Length: 309
Image (spheres, rainbow, N blue to C red):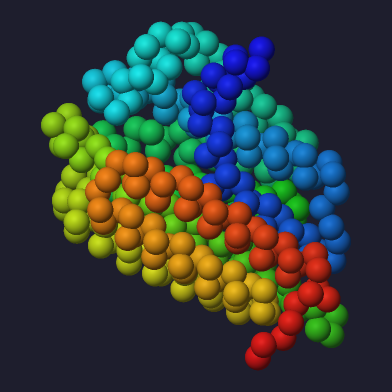
C-alpha cells in the first residue's frame, strides 16, 4: 500500500505542491486578518483539499497529454505512462476524480469559489497544451499557479472587491490589492524558474517543434529573462510587505529570499543537470516556505514583530 501511494504521489509530483501551497496559505492568513478573525480548521482543510485536488488534476492531465513526448525524451522516458507502470485509463480516472474533488471542495467553501471552479480547472489544465503553439508557455504556468493565492483569498472573503475601503477609524480593507500583488509575484517567480527548468530540454524541444522562450531565444538569453523576472518578483514582494505594513521579520526573510534567488541563477548558469534540479526544486521550495513562515509570524505573532522604521 505504501509503495502504491508513493508511486501515485510521484506520478503527479505531489512534492511539488510545496511551490504554490505556501502562497495560498499566506493569502488565507492575510484574508482572515482583514476580516479580524482566524481561519477555522474546516476552512483550512477545504483550502488544502482544493489545492491538492487541483494540482493533482493538472499534473495528471499534463502526464496524459504529454505521454508521447515523454516517451521520446531520454530525460522523461522512465516516467510512469511511457513505461506502463501506470495505465492511461488509471491516469484518466485520477484526473477526473481529482477534478471532481476540487469542485466539491470549492462548493463547500462558498458559492463564488464554486462558480469560478470550472474556470480555474480550465486554466490549470490548458497550460499543458501551450507548448504546442506559443513561446510564452511559462506565462500560462505562472497564471495557473497564481490562482492559488487568489483562490485562497476568495475562500475566506467569498466576494471580489477591487477597491480598498476603510472600516471604522483605522481599519483599512485592501480589497483585491493584497492577493493581486501576491499573484503577480507568483507569476513572475514561476516564469523565472520554469525557464530554468526548460533549459534541460532545449535540444529535445527544438527537434520536436515544441515552443518555449528557451527555444525561441536560446538558453543564455532566456536565463537573462528569468533573472529579470525574479528581480521584479522580489520588488513586488517588497511592495507587498509595505502595503501590509510588515516589520523586521519580513524584511529579514526577504534578504534570505534574495540570496536564494541569486544562488538559483548561479546554479542555472552552469547548465549542469543536477544543479538545475537543485535550483528548480530545492531552492524554490525553500523560497516558498520561507515566505509562508515570515508572513505567518507577522500575522499570527504580532508581538514578535519588531519595528525597524
